[in-house]
Image (cartoon, rainbow, N blue to C red; front, top):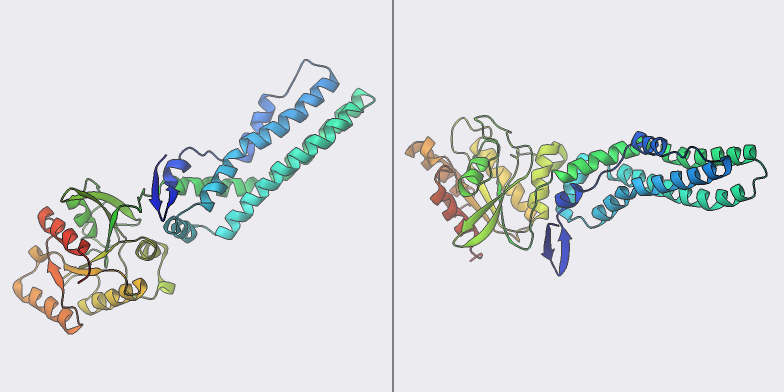
Length: 338
């Protein structure tokens, strides 16, 4: 089981756990009962066994929902934030509680109706009691059928989350679209995010592992951000905000100096101010001018002048295609604030 330790608590890797959770559909539960329904026994014994069967299948097949509930209760705030961006968590909790109720009803009906079966005075009465018991058990679970489908999607989402060990060094790479964040990650790690000459290629948070002077550093590639208030951001941008606000570690802010950048220089500086405000001034943010190999000296001077006018006196210049330059940027941002 993948895990991470923070503040003395062992935190689970949600993807590693979710991959072992199979939330059944209502039809799967129903089919399991049909396939194992008892035959070739007298009516009394058949009804008794069927009562046991329905209870056992409902409780057993929905156990993964209980595992999911435990997983959600222990999620790191970053993972919980990602989940809440894509799902209505109040609805998710209602779906889980529906299944909890179905399990409780199955147990209660089993306890109540097995005594009524023992007291049945005829095979007809036994069959009627059995039908009533099974109907009440399955009726409650059927109310959860749509919820089970939603919970299956939650598990699928969790299984695709990146594994991040919050006890180890983390550097978050942020910035506007098409600034070269994914190229930076590819240069310093074995991660191979999609790279394309158009903005908004990265849709999710991606993790790579870099070796910086013998120390493993988790480099977090985040989706590009536009210069706008979080209330106006789409789901993709909100995932980047979740990484910035919920994960520890310093931030590399990549600037795109090219004239054709999706955000002009003033907007990129404004976005940097927004990010610093999000972080509350407690985390180191290092500005890195990327793509120095794609602009001439005049353009580079203009970018540096714009940064200086905005009060940004510390910055680096790199090409994300140069692994050594990227590693030097990691070394610089990992240094304690002066």
